[in-house]
Image (cartoon, rainbow, N blue to C red):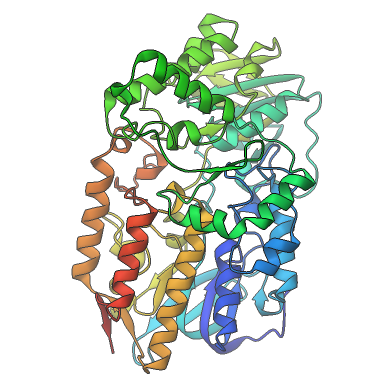
Length: 549
């Protein structure tokens, strides 16, 4: 099904790839400025990551009141969230609502995958090819393809021989999957895996969790959005949005019981307070739930190893107090990375799952998977775990995977995969040297996944949109990031990343989850405020750092 009039070849001002949060807002923003815009989307509907990630327990770990659009007061006043942290179906309904009220679907080609994007220098335009053998032409192209869009399925031997069913959390079937009474194995214990494990444990006859890396899991403490809470939020949306934008992370913690909007950290460093004070601060935020224990406790948690160890030990003590079997608890202790340097996972019930006699924890770091058999999974110690279903919660080729899956060719036929062969380089995560008139929304080198993505997306879309409008008004045919500024910014991204404890973790933040992927910091850890200021500085200097022809 394709929205609007279908054309095999047509010219637009802007082609946008992707119809998630960033693609929808890009379409709305640019179309409102009078530009001709077309969105190309591989899925059959809007939603991006929230279209594909339908696994049991899929939920956002940032509060709904800030993980949502702020560009329209009419939108935020008319929409009611059912819970503080929204589940996937609610977020997808929200994005479908956005597409409907702003009449966006008429300008989206669904069920269409971009296979190539080639810059034609003689015309200063992009030629976009799809899997339907169509060609679209545009002066500008925006990749709104998301940071976590290409599911990563490890190449386990024997997978094709498995006689049961298998699924990936990032590409879950749209029809219901009944796991009740099944023997289910889950491989992976990142955010998706942890959310899925909690829900699968409620219905499965047997659950086997294959854990390579133990992660830190703190409570989410979700609750219903009461009418009173919703009313109070709507009356204070301006303050809420402004407060979030002025924070390092764009994440705001809203507590209806005391009507506070919290983003500020403790005023002292971790080791500058007494042991009892530290415990009190950690305990307070453990009970509150969410990312507060990482973002609003002490300012040096991600900078000082001794400070970080205090938070890590606090969580380990919590694990010991919840998990009844000491040997199982010890396997669940995160010891491979500092607290918060991999995505902090949030769940109230994850550790409780391992108190059930129907749940088995397998440490595949010390006892790796040898092969997948027709009847289950065989580990290196010779144990075979009989399974009816395998769930891969093995993450994504983050940031670059989906882009490099497209044949993107810039000036002189330069391929993006060759430009990034030795490491990812961008200017501000927005533009790439050698690829004129091409923009990335929340691309590598921007704060993106280390912030509230909704805030980051709105800032990027507005910056890109205003840059394109400026070019149109001044009859600029080509905009291209200078190699110099790309090198300088990329070096700054690496320096910032490795000046923190993030550099001590083998995480997808540095591409460590993909074999052969060049190691390097992909998100910008300097915070949203400083990044926002740098973007404004570039825009206010007539887009200094861009070659304009």
